[in-house]
Length: 252
Image (tube, rainbow, N blue to C red):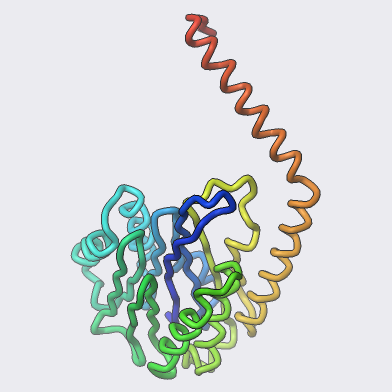
């Protein structure tokens, strides 16, 4: 099932504190890819594809959240999977990368691993699809733009090289997911997007991103003070609850 990219990036937040973000993006010539392939948390990103086993993605992220290294977590899942030869599984965590393409995946299939990222694909027009995806991500990695936008650029580059070779399948989809260690007052709307059924998946994902970015900026402008007041009130309520507990009061 087509091609995807997983990435890890270190950055500094507005207070100058070090943070890490993880992202995954995918596209295919079938509907609803966002429900099956991309998984991410503040501890890593995973993509499961080819003959999809969704549990590899779900459990992979659970294992990363439990502290397992990505290469240990994903390899353990493959070792326990009787269908591993038909799977593609790849991802990143805070320290490493992992990529696997089973010998029974459909041509063209393969993967690449770079510094802080992985790209994998199957049923592609050729190796140039994953290479173009990786090159586009690397070229834009230092730019001061949201990761979600740059992931779309990477998918677009692979799509332009031919992407999924099944031209007889006109219903396509695309998705992206970005998570961060940063504790943000408002999570960007554009960090979790899906286009489930369309003939132009990358163009539609980009349009969805642009509208979501615009909507997020409008929401921040209108509601940021409300969010800040709500957080302050919650903190105040928490202090009151702690004090009651210290005084020995009980609602029982």
